Amino acid sequence: MGCLSNWGLANPHFRLDRGRAWRAGWGMTIFESKRVLAWGGLDVPLLGLDHDWFGQRVEPGAAFSLVKDPRRLWFVAAHRRAAALHPRSRPGEFQAELWRYDVAEFFLAHPASGRYFEFNLAPNGAWWNCEFTAPRVRAREEDEPMPEVATFADLAPDGSWLAAMAVPLDLLKARLDFGPQTTANVTFILESPAQRFLTAAKLGDGEPDYHQPGLFPRVAFVPVPELG
Image 1 (cartoon, rainbow, N blue to C red):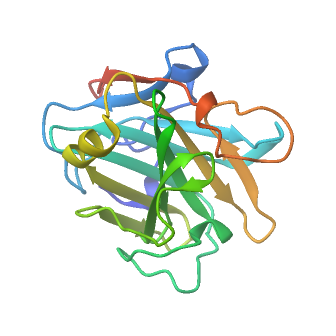
Image 2: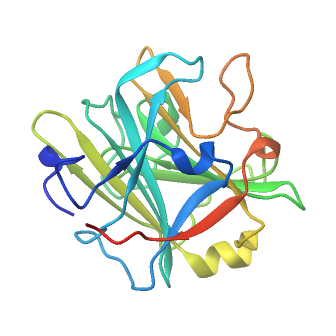
């Protein structure tokens, strides 16, 4: 995927688009690739998030991308600041309560039933997922890792990080009827232990609450733009 130290505008593999897609009312952008993607060759734009839940500027901002290839849905997340990691998190390992430390998250919801999935991705590639039948109502008491999920991570010497999660499409289609009617959101928790909360979709006022599937925008599938 390239060296993280030159991630950003200087790296043609990671073009930063400051979120025009959802702000223009197109929904939550999911880029579509006709070819099967692999870590080390994710030539996709990153969408920037530079304000927190309360509208305060975040410097440096975070960046993310959702990309669907013929086999998997990819979630890519990045930040140019060292992360506070869950002390028990290990690369590629399933770990609960990642949200207590720095983490990137994405949510996929099925509007007709109210069911939704939450996926957590730590900067070092640790991950977690959970299915909910209603806001904060777990489908099962115990954790149940979704099978065949793969994660990847690249941490630079200065602490900047880039991580990705690849989730099998067939499982998302079977368990969530993933498709044009799906709604989604991307969020971050950064700067732990103080914790700043970032969300791609506007989820109202008050204290940060990411579990509002009724406010998630519908997904919008967009072909991956050609890299110039």
